[in-house]
Amino acid sequence: MAKRGTEVRTVGISATGMYVPDRILTNAHLEKMVDTTDQWIQTRTGIRERHVASPGTPASDLAAPALQSALRTRGLLPEELDHVIVTTVTPDMFFPSTACVLQDKVGARNAWGYDLSAACSGFIFGLIAGSQAVASGSVRNAAVVGVDVLTTLVDWTNRNQCVLFGDGCGVVILEPRDDGDGIIDAVLHVDGSGGQYLNMLGGGSLNPPTHATVDQGLHYLYQDGKAVFKVASTSMADVTLEVVERNGFRIQDISLIIPHQANLRIIEAVAKRLGIPREQVLINIDRYGNTTSATIPMGLHEATRSGRVKKGDLVVLTSFGGGYTWGAVLLRWEL
Ligand code: COA
Image (cartoon, rainbow, N blue to C red; front, side, top):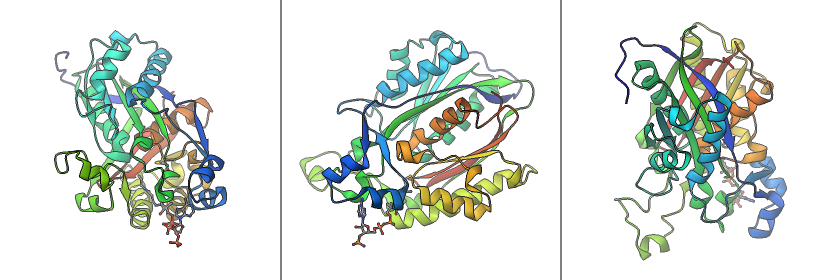
């Protein structure tokens, strides 16, 4: 760790990267696995297909190529990376952290780091943690890696959940800036009383893995879809407006909102509550499903590559997830 600097600096995203497994599971495949239809899935969720890792693929195998591609884009060698934060609820294992595994896999031998758990809001929580480390001067740069292999927590016989998720990874590199662009502000929240509606109860110290916990399915994700749907839509819209207005902007000033991709209907409800057209909101859930921590950095990467966001644009990232955890980040795009 470098000696702590004295100045708090502005921090921005200097490169992005992403990786998804090659294997694509379409709704037609799912029709053969559970009692569902392409029509139900598309109408109720907006998902057409998702990328799914082969059995036995750890999160670090998705994270390594995504991080390597972001480093290449920025022109940084792995050993020039100072810090790595991996946001995930599907780490390779409880410990060592996936950050340690990833550091070794990519040869970032001078980086220190850790895993951060905030479910679908993991990436924006990690973005703020990483940007504060860079702003303080304690590190020169940081990689924030949103990665999940959520299909490992899915009961593939349960049609209520197996249609919703996919696997993937998105990465950003954070560095200080002199021009005041980059991350402008963030509003982050947790409400632990929402934990009962979205969780995975098995495997930790509360319910250590036993035959009984497996028999009860406690190693699978659980969600009360309707309860989550309602609070996710209102929370993402309200926190977006809060971060925009408290910085003196109007929602119309935002070029692109990149929301967590859990359900197309949630995204449409957010746009409606904000009074903005669908075109102002990034949607890629049709191709990836819900990739948990990875949805926002993957969206950011695709929006940059396709020219959907340009230098100088105001962008809001917003998410809602298990915990409950939610928030919004306002930034001026600099790539
Ligand atoms: N195929 C066909 N039918 C299905 C189905 C599927 N894949 N999944 C559920 N159904 C059925 C249900 O069994 C139910 O049938 P019933 O009325 O005979 O009981 C019916 O469809 C309606 O189910 P319901 O759960 O009420 O659907 P919904 O419109 O609420 O959609 C979710 C379910 C999960 C898609 C939706 O609630 C959701 O997206 N919630 C938020 C998820 C979320 O944000 N999670 C957070 C992760 S960050």
